[in-house]
Image 1 (cartoon, rainbow, N blue to C red):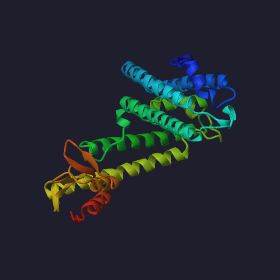
Image 2: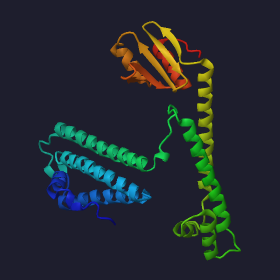
Image 3: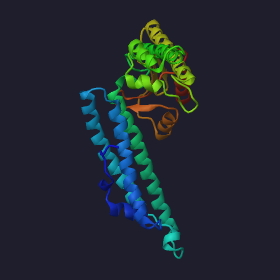
Image 4: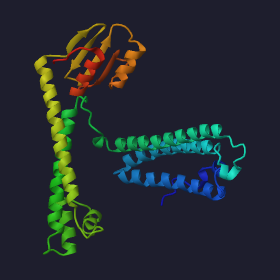
Length: 315
Protein backbone atom coordinates (compact mmCIF):
# COMPACT_ATOMS: atom_id res chain seq x y z
CA UNK A 1 0.00 0.00 0.00
CA UNK A 2 1.28 3.42 -0.94
CA UNK A 3 1.89 6.13 1.67
CA UNK A 4 0.63 8.97 -0.50
CA UNK A 5 -1.69 9.82 2.40
CA UNK A 6 -1.23 9.03 6.09
CA UNK A 7 -3.78 8.89 8.95
CA UNK A 8 -2.04 11.70 10.87
CA UNK A 9 -2.95 14.18 8.13
CA UNK A 10 -6.36 14.31 9.81
CA UNK A 11 -6.11 16.01 13.18
CA UNK A 12 -6.92 13.50 15.93
CA UNK A 13 -8.75 16.06 18.10
CA UNK A 14 -10.97 17.03 15.16
CA UNK A 15 -11.81 13.38 14.53
CA UNK A 16 -12.35 12.77 18.27
CA UNK A 17 -14.74 15.73 18.62
CA UNK A 18 -16.70 14.42 15.61
CA UNK A 19 -17.78 11.46 17.77
CA UNK A 20 -17.59 12.82 21.30
CA UNK A 21 -21.32 13.56 21.40
CA UNK A 22 -22.53 10.47 19.53
CA UNK A 23 -20.32 7.54 20.55
CA UNK A 24 -19.23 5.73 23.72
CA UNK A 25 -15.86 5.06 22.08
CA UNK A 26 -14.86 8.37 20.44
CA UNK A 27 -11.15 7.47 20.69
CA UNK A 28 -11.58 4.39 18.48
CA UNK A 29 -13.94 6.17 16.11
CA UNK A 30 -11.41 8.99 15.73
CA UNK A 31 -8.64 6.57 14.81
CA UNK A 32 -10.94 4.85 12.33
CA UNK A 33 -11.77 8.19 10.69
CA UNK A 34 -8.05 8.85 10.23
CA UNK A 35 -7.49 5.39 8.76
CA UNK A 36 -10.53 5.63 6.46
CA UNK A 37 -9.26 8.93 5.07
CA UNK A 38 -5.78 7.56 4.33
CA UNK A 39 -7.04 4.25 2.93
CA UNK A 40 -9.43 5.97 0.54
CA UNK A 41 -6.86 8.48 -0.75
CA UNK A 42 -4.26 5.75 -1.20
CA UNK A 43 -6.67 3.47 -3.07
CA UNK A 44 -7.50 6.33 -5.47
CA UNK A 45 -3.77 7.04 -5.87
CA UNK A 46 -3.07 3.41 -6.75
CA UNK A 47 -5.92 3.30 -9.27
CA UNK A 48 -5.00 6.57 -11.02
CA UNK A 49 -1.25 5.93 -11.11
CA UNK A 50 -2.00 2.51 -12.56
CA UNK A 51 -3.60 4.24 -15.55
CA UNK A 52 -0.46 6.25 -16.37
CA UNK A 53 1.38 4.72 -19.34
CA UNK A 54 4.48 6.90 -19.47
CA UNK A 55 6.47 9.53 -17.56
CA UNK A 56 4.39 12.40 -18.95
CA UNK A 57 1.13 10.82 -17.82
CA UNK A 58 2.64 9.94 -14.44
CA UNK A 59 3.58 13.60 -13.94
CA UNK A 60 0.05 14.69 -14.86
CA UNK A 61 -1.42 12.07 -12.53
CA UNK A 62 0.80 13.16 -9.62
CA UNK A 63 -0.16 16.82 -10.05
CA UNK A 64 -3.88 16.06 -10.33
CA UNK A 65 -3.76 13.72 -7.34
CA UNK A 66 -2.11 16.37 -5.19
CA UNK A 67 -4.99 18.74 -6.01
CA UNK A 68 -7.51 15.98 -5.42
CA UNK A 69 -5.99 15.12 -2.04
CA UNK A 70 -6.03 18.76 -0.92
CA UNK A 71 -9.67 19.16 -1.95
CA UNK A 72 -10.75 15.83 -0.44
CA UNK A 73 -9.05 16.63 2.87
CA UNK A 74 -10.83 19.99 3.05
CA UNK A 75 -14.22 18.37 2.40
CA UNK A 76 -13.47 15.53 4.83
CA UNK A 77 -12.53 17.97 7.59
CA UNK A 78 -15.71 19.97 6.92
CA UNK A 79 -17.70 16.76 7.41
CA UNK A 80 -15.93 16.04 10.71
CA UNK A 81 -16.59 19.59 11.88
CA UNK A 82 -20.29 19.18 11.07
CA UNK A 83 -20.34 15.85 12.93
CA UNK A 84 -18.82 17.50 16.01
CA UNK A 85 -21.94 19.65 16.35
CA UNK A 86 -24.34 16.70 16.48
CA UNK A 87 -25.23 14.86 19.67
CA UNK A 88 -27.12 11.74 20.71
CA UNK A 89 -29.47 11.41 23.73
CA UNK A 90 -27.81 8.06 24.41
CA UNK A 91 -24.62 9.97 25.24
CA UNK A 92 -25.86 13.28 26.62
CA UNK A 93 -29.06 12.05 28.25
CA UNK A 94 -32.63 12.75 27.13
CA UNK A 95 -33.42 15.48 29.65
CA UNK A 96 -33.88 18.84 27.91
CA UNK A 97 -32.45 17.35 24.72
CA UNK A 98 -32.31 20.08 22.00
CA UNK A 99 -34.15 18.09 19.33
CA UNK A 100 -34.83 20.96 16.91
CA UNK A 101 -31.28 22.27 17.04
CA UNK A 102 -29.86 18.77 16.61
CA UNK A 103 -32.04 18.23 13.53
CA UNK A 104 -30.47 21.31 11.95
CA UNK A 105 -26.94 20.09 12.70
CA UNK A 106 -27.79 16.63 11.32
CA UNK A 107 -29.06 18.27 8.12
CA UNK A 108 -25.77 20.13 7.82
CA UNK A 109 -23.84 16.91 8.39
CA UNK A 110 -25.76 15.17 5.59
CA UNK A 111 -25.10 18.11 3.28
CA UNK A 112 -21.35 17.95 4.01
CA UNK A 113 -21.35 14.21 3.32
CA UNK A 114 -23.10 14.75 -0.01
CA UNK A 115 -20.55 17.45 -0.87
CA UNK A 116 -17.71 15.03 -0.16
CA UNK A 117 -19.22 12.22 -2.20
CA UNK A 118 -19.96 14.50 -5.15
CA UNK A 119 -16.48 16.04 -5.08
CA UNK A 120 -14.88 12.60 -4.90
CA UNK A 121 -16.86 11.19 -7.83
CA UNK A 122 -16.56 14.18 -10.14
CA UNK A 123 -12.88 14.88 -9.46
CA UNK A 124 -11.79 11.28 -9.98
CA UNK A 125 -13.74 11.14 -13.24
CA UNK A 126 -12.11 14.37 -14.44
CA UNK A 127 -8.63 13.01 -13.68
CA UNK A 128 -9.40 9.81 -15.57
CA UNK A 129 -10.66 11.79 -18.56
CA UNK A 130 -7.51 13.91 -18.50
CA UNK A 131 -5.36 10.78 -18.64
CA UNK A 132 -7.63 9.04 -21.15
CA UNK A 133 -9.36 11.76 -23.20
CA UNK A 134 -10.30 9.15 -25.78
CA UNK A 135 -12.55 7.49 -23.19
CA UNK A 136 -14.48 10.67 -22.38
CA UNK A 137 -18.17 10.62 -23.36
CA UNK A 138 -18.77 11.93 -26.88
CA UNK A 139 -21.37 14.66 -26.97
CA UNK A 140 -23.77 14.68 -29.92
CA UNK A 141 -23.16 18.44 -30.14
CA UNK A 142 -19.39 17.96 -30.56
CA UNK A 143 -18.40 19.24 -34.01
CA UNK A 144 -16.01 16.27 -34.29
CA UNK A 145 -18.51 13.70 -32.98
CA UNK A 146 -18.65 11.66 -36.21
CA UNK A 147 -14.90 11.08 -36.36
CA UNK A 148 -14.68 10.33 -32.63
CA UNK A 149 -17.52 7.83 -32.81
CA UNK A 150 -16.01 6.12 -35.86
CA UNK A 151 -12.69 5.81 -34.02
CA UNK A 152 -14.39 4.48 -30.91
CA UNK A 153 -16.35 1.90 -32.91
CA UNK A 154 -13.16 0.77 -34.64
CA UNK A 155 -11.42 0.46 -31.27
CA UNK A 156 -14.31 -1.57 -29.80
CA UNK A 157 -14.46 -3.85 -32.86
CA UNK A 158 -10.72 -4.53 -32.62
CA UNK A 159 -11.13 -5.32 -28.92
CA UNK A 160 -14.01 -7.68 -29.72
CA UNK A 161 -11.89 -9.56 -32.25
CA UNK A 162 -8.97 -9.67 -29.81
CA UNK A 163 -11.18 -11.22 -27.10
CA UNK A 164 -12.45 -13.86 -29.52
CA UNK A 165 -8.94 -14.76 -30.65
CA UNK A 166 -7.65 -14.83 -27.07
CA UNK A 167 -10.42 -17.21 -26.03
CA UNK A 168 -9.63 -19.59 -28.88
CA UNK A 169 -6.03 -19.71 -27.68
CA UNK A 170 -6.67 -20.12 -23.95
CA UNK A 171 -9.31 -22.81 -24.55
CA UNK A 172 -7.17 -24.82 -26.96
CA UNK A 173 -6.68 -28.16 -25.19
CA UNK A 174 -3.75 -29.08 -27.44
CA UNK A 175 -1.58 -26.25 -26.07
CA UNK A 176 0.25 -26.22 -22.75
CA UNK A 177 -0.07 -23.25 -20.39
CA UNK A 178 3.34 -21.90 -21.40
CA UNK A 179 2.50 -22.30 -25.10
CA UNK A 180 -0.76 -20.41 -24.61
CA UNK A 181 1.06 -17.61 -22.80
CA UNK A 182 3.62 -17.34 -25.58
CA UNK A 183 0.95 -17.42 -28.30
CA UNK A 184 -1.07 -14.66 -26.58
CA UNK A 185 2.03 -12.50 -26.43
CA UNK A 186 3.13 -13.11 -30.00
CA UNK A 187 -0.23 -13.03 -31.83
CA UNK A 188 -2.05 -10.41 -29.78
CA UNK A 189 0.88 -8.40 -28.44
CA UNK A 190 -0.32 -8.87 -24.84
CA UNK A 191 2.05 -8.44 -21.94
CA UNK A 192 3.14 -11.58 -20.10
CA UNK A 193 1.22 -10.44 -17.01
CA UNK A 194 -2.01 -9.97 -18.99
CA UNK A 195 -1.57 -13.28 -20.80
CA UNK A 196 -1.02 -15.16 -17.54
CA UNK A 197 -4.03 -13.46 -15.95
CA UNK A 198 -6.26 -14.68 -18.79
CA UNK A 199 -5.21 -18.22 -17.94
CA UNK A 200 -6.20 -17.90 -14.28
CA UNK A 201 -9.66 -19.44 -13.60
CA UNK A 202 -12.28 -17.12 -12.13
CA UNK A 203 -14.52 -17.99 -9.18
CA UNK A 204 -16.45 -20.57 -11.25
CA UNK A 205 -13.49 -21.94 -13.15
CA UNK A 206 -13.73 -19.94 -16.40
CA UNK A 207 -10.59 -18.83 -18.21
CA UNK A 208 -10.14 -16.14 -20.85
CA UNK A 209 -12.69 -13.41 -21.42
CA UNK A 210 -16.12 -14.21 -19.97
CA UNK A 211 -19.09 -14.45 -22.32
CA UNK A 212 -20.73 -11.42 -20.71
CA UNK A 213 -17.67 -9.32 -21.58
CA UNK A 214 -18.07 -10.11 -25.26
CA UNK A 215 -21.84 -9.51 -25.10
CA UNK A 216 -21.44 -6.17 -23.32
CA UNK A 217 -18.79 -4.97 -25.76
CA UNK A 218 -20.91 -6.03 -28.71
CA UNK A 219 -23.91 -4.17 -27.26
CA UNK A 220 -21.76 -1.07 -26.89
CA UNK A 221 -20.69 -1.35 -30.55
CA UNK A 222 -24.35 -1.49 -31.63
CA UNK A 223 -25.19 1.48 -29.41
CA UNK A 224 -22.33 3.55 -30.82
CA UNK A 225 -23.30 2.69 -34.40
CA UNK A 226 -26.86 3.79 -33.72
CA UNK A 227 -25.62 7.10 -32.30
CA UNK A 228 -23.38 7.57 -35.32
CA UNK A 229 -26.32 7.00 -37.68
CA UNK A 230 -28.43 9.52 -35.75
CA UNK A 231 -25.74 12.21 -35.85
CA UNK A 232 -25.03 11.61 -39.54
CA UNK A 233 -28.76 11.85 -40.27
CA UNK A 234 -28.94 15.10 -38.32
CA UNK A 235 -26.02 16.57 -40.25
CA UNK A 236 -27.59 15.46 -43.53
CA UNK A 237 -30.79 17.21 -42.55
CA UNK A 238 -28.79 20.36 -41.71
CA UNK A 239 -27.34 20.34 -45.24
CA UNK A 240 -30.80 19.76 -46.77
CA UNK A 241 -32.39 22.60 -44.82
CA UNK A 242 -29.46 24.90 -45.55
CA UNK A 243 -29.10 26.29 -42.04
CA UNK A 244 -30.95 26.81 -38.74
CA UNK A 245 -34.74 26.91 -38.89
CA UNK A 246 -36.54 29.68 -37.03
CA UNK A 247 -40.12 29.64 -35.74
CA UNK A 248 -41.52 32.84 -34.34
CA UNK A 249 -43.88 32.95 -31.38
CA UNK A 250 -45.35 35.81 -29.41
CA UNK A 251 -42.43 37.38 -27.56
CA UNK A 252 -39.59 35.44 -29.15
CA UNK A 253 -38.12 32.93 -31.60
CA UNK A 254 -37.32 29.22 -31.54
CA UNK A 255 -34.20 28.11 -33.43
CA UNK A 256 -33.81 24.48 -34.53
CA UNK A 257 -30.17 23.96 -35.45
CA UNK A 258 -29.41 20.53 -36.90
CA UNK A 259 -25.82 21.55 -37.56
CA UNK A 260 -24.68 22.06 -33.96
CA UNK A 261 -27.46 19.95 -32.45
CA UNK A 262 -29.32 22.45 -30.26
CA UNK A 263 -32.80 23.84 -29.82
CA UNK A 264 -32.65 27.48 -28.72
CA UNK A 265 -35.38 29.76 -27.46
CA UNK A 266 -34.73 33.50 -27.80
CA UNK A 267 -36.93 36.02 -25.99
CA UNK A 268 -37.37 39.65 -27.04
CA UNK A 269 -37.34 40.60 -23.35
CA UNK A 270 -36.31 38.81 -20.20
CA UNK A 271 -39.00 36.18 -19.43
CA UNK A 272 -40.78 36.36 -16.08
CA UNK A 273 -40.03 34.01 -13.18
CA UNK A 274 -42.83 31.56 -14.07
CA UNK A 275 -41.55 31.23 -17.64
CA UNK A 276 -37.97 30.78 -16.46
CA UNK A 277 -39.04 28.03 -14.07
CA UNK A 278 -41.01 26.34 -16.87
CA UNK A 279 -37.95 26.47 -19.12
CA UNK A 280 -35.80 24.85 -16.44
CA UNK A 281 -38.41 22.21 -15.66
CA UNK A 282 -38.43 21.26 -19.35
CA UNK A 283 -34.68 20.89 -19.61
CA UNK A 284 -33.66 24.26 -21.04
CA UNK A 285 -30.63 26.04 -19.60
CA UNK A 286 -29.60 29.66 -20.00
CA UNK A 287 -26.55 30.18 -22.24
CA UNK A 288 -25.26 33.71 -21.43
CA UNK A 289 -22.88 33.87 -24.38
CA UNK A 290 -25.78 33.16 -26.78
CA UNK A 291 -28.46 35.04 -24.83
CA UNK A 292 -30.71 32.03 -25.34
CA UNK A 293 -32.30 29.14 -23.48
CA UNK A 294 -31.14 25.89 -25.05
CA UNK A 295 -31.04 22.11 -24.82
CA UNK A 296 -29.73 19.35 -27.08
CA UNK A 297 -31.81 18.71 -30.18
CA UNK A 298 -33.96 15.60 -29.82
CA UNK A 299 -37.62 14.76 -30.48
CA UNK A 300 -38.20 15.32 -26.78
CA UNK A 301 -36.54 18.75 -26.97
CA UNK A 302 -38.86 19.82 -29.81
CA UNK A 303 -41.85 18.67 -27.79
CA UNK A 304 -40.63 20.51 -24.67
CA UNK A 305 -40.13 23.69 -26.72
CA UNK A 306 -43.77 23.39 -27.80
CA UNK A 307 -44.87 23.03 -24.15
CA UNK A 308 -42.94 26.16 -23.17
CA UNK A 309 -43.93 28.36 -26.13
CA UNK A 310 -47.18 26.83 -27.37
CA UNK A 311 -45.80 26.67 -30.95
CA UNK A 312 -45.90 23.55 -33.18
CA UNK A 313 -42.48 22.63 -34.57
CA UNK A 314 -42.66 20.88 -37.92
CA UNK A 315 -39.00 20.98 -39.02
